[in-house]
Image (cartoon, rainbow, N blue to C red; front, side):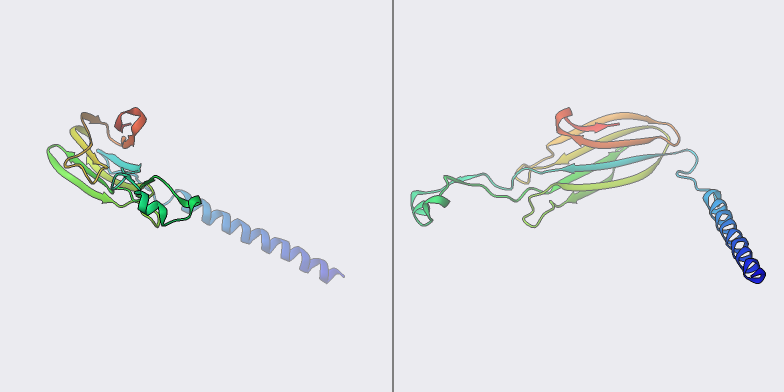
Length: 172
């Protein structure tokens, strides 16, 4: 019986030591090696868009002959395409184009939102920023444009987003 109690105590001591070593390892790696999100004197520009482009084509009227070919319960007066236009985004920083990307619409029928995300480190200071977005494949130029002079502090994060209810491209 005494031997059994000694084995039980040794098990508890061994388990406590293992948990202590495990906690020590977690404690060491939670603060070492030090992680620096940005280099000193750098700022970050994050461009994040999630937007549905306009329809690729207009709706068309269905002729009487086409309607006669289908059952009465399936007849409709207009046929509208589901496919959306891809989103083209261009970012110009201090007069140089630093990003140009085309985001295809999601979904099996290409009828969902187009999503794009990019991050870039820039030197802190004042920059001329021009952001352009095209969401209609039928138009020639860009549909939205935002031009601003931004002053970025070291370790500051500038988020470029698109919000139609706020007039289009926003800087936060």
